Image (cartoon, rainbow, N blue to C red; front, side):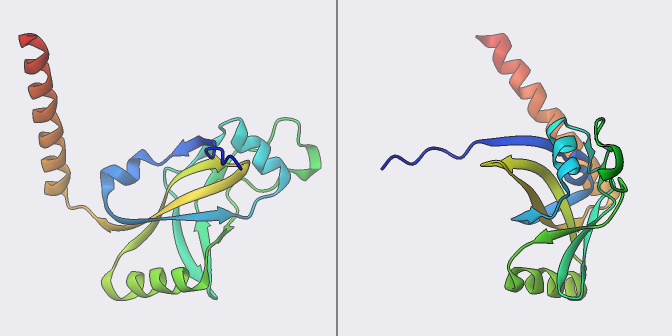
Length: 155
């Protein structure tokens, strides 16, 4: 029996999250979508920029995720900014909720992708960066770029 590699196609990434937060841990979650939303995501009409997750009644909910209405969707299109439920194990949700409440972590969606034809969300347990942390990260990245340029020049 041959096992094929799972085909992963990234639909959107939250680059702002990597700039504003330290990512402590990542989790994979399914997402509850309506048919026209899936078609819209496949077209790449998705924005994660200002989205975050919260726990309501033991369910993980993603807020602020904008999925543009599907072009050919007529009456079946839903509100682009509606709250969507994420599908995770109860233990994982309770662990994230506990860390969010006690230690001040944030739960942020990092990317949306298709894995074996199903929409998945990569959720990150994040700690907010201070301004000096952002500057330090930018300086480190700039120094690394200069080193790589210098190495290319010597070859």
